[in-house]
Amino acid sequence: MPIRLPELPADPTAPFPDPGTALAEPDGLLAMGGDLSPVRLLNAYAAGVFPWYSEGQPLLWWSPDPRTVFRTDGVRLSSRFRRSLRNSPWTVRADTAFGAVIDACASIPRRDQPGTWITPAMRAAYVHLHHLGHAHSIEVRDGGRLVGGLYGVAIGRMFFGESMFSAESGGSKVALAGLCHRLREWGWPLLDAQVGNPHLRSLGAEAWPRERFLQTLAVLVAAPGSADSWSGRFGTLPAAALA
Image: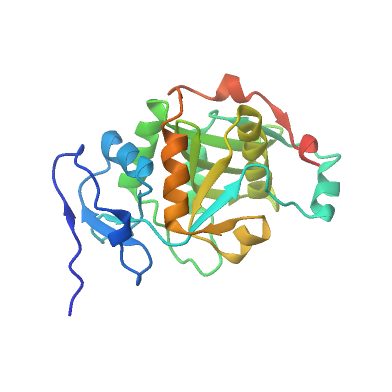
């Protein structure tokens, strides 16, 4: 029988279906439809749900089980990579080039991934969230050149990673490690990485049962937070400090 997914109503403030009702195959597929308005997106992340679809597909919403997360004190960089950072000229900043980061995430080729899920509509939605102070980018630079980065959404004391890229070997690792370094300093214990893969697991990602993730998430998104630029708050972090 064909799969019949719940369809979200037009009202962007309407609640999402219970993530416990998501499909087991494909893992976590929960609902379809709706829109990518800021209210809907923020409500989705706060509920443990995120959008993920390709051009030509309907808008799909997911809440996989298990959920891939990083403890912000648990990112693993190999000893060899840390040694390579000791004399690195790279620096890590935040919110200085959101558009360039999301464009790089969409355009840089990836192994076994012929296209991108960052459609023009997705790009526009997250740029809008960035202008509202909810979406943030992390930039790794070698002088003025962007060599790596990532972007995601912050609510309360929770960061939801969306995508990362490397233009030079190790660029995304430094972006992730730099972000978690700052989040740990700020008292943010967790970073959502959504769906796992061998690369993320090699960096310390953990697979949490969805129920555990949702229980922890509810506490973190309810913590006091503010919607603003991270540029000044994040400052400049030398990549050598991650060694």
